[in-house]
Image (cartoon, rainbow, N blue to C red; front, side, top):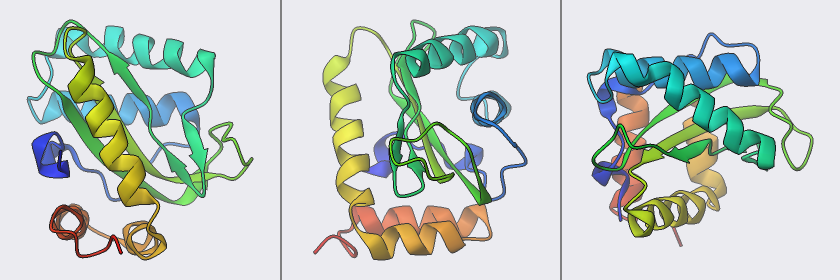
Length: 158
């Protein structure tokens, strides 16, 4: 699975304005609503589902990266977006560091395989320090989209 299979490029945010975990999740879900990727009426329910998932354990996986995700019946296919926050946000990460890179993922409950493949792709790509460094420095959504395309074409993973 590739980023192009699930990232809604119209919802990519290069400069998140959020200052905490819940507002970052709300901002990214709202970006998906604005892009037409998820229905506006489902926004609050999806935010709530992601926050409920966060209660089980932070999806801040360390090294300035978080992968908030949930399964939700309002989507009929895997959908996601990417956000960057240069200053970082306290996300209760496993390593205690602030998060700068956010990969938000929503999938239909009946497609667990797609959900797992997307998480696997994200975690594999994010092991590459060069890819992460470039993403954290990206200033525009176009820059981020280009980096995701390069990652899809295996230009980072060694």
